[in-house]
Image 1: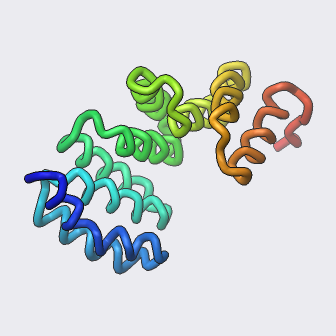
Image 2: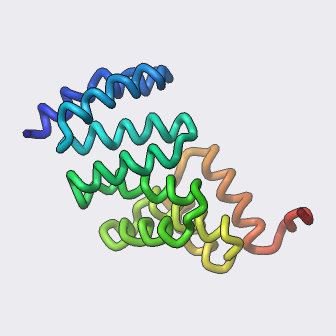
Image 3: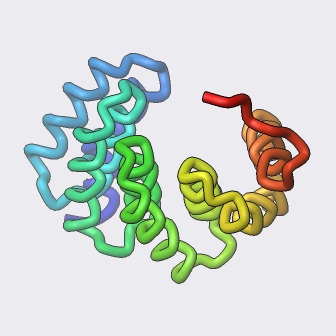
Length: 163
């Protein structure tokens, strides 16, 4: 199946997802994924829909299916890595992020994934260079502010309250 046919199969689901109509998008994208199991885009966008709902295990399953269809699909690698991070599987999240960085050393999403994963583990010295490099990619202001806050903690400028 060519890329044009794959994109055509997910167009409606993508539009629903962009409009925030997540349940409807899941229905459309599930049908596309079941009808075209080799369509990595159907699995990827279905994973995005589940991720939006906070269904990280379901999202991960979809991203893995996308990677089965297209092993070098960077977007699916990032989605899988973020899902793993949200599920608390930090080692596998780091491996996924590093795999992307081997393919694309300056990929902003991979830099954020690796930096945020180290940060979440409390490994601030490891997180800092990835987060600093991420800021060099000129991310959107909301994310940049979040990362700057993380870096303040990494540098010891701000202390976390006792739990």
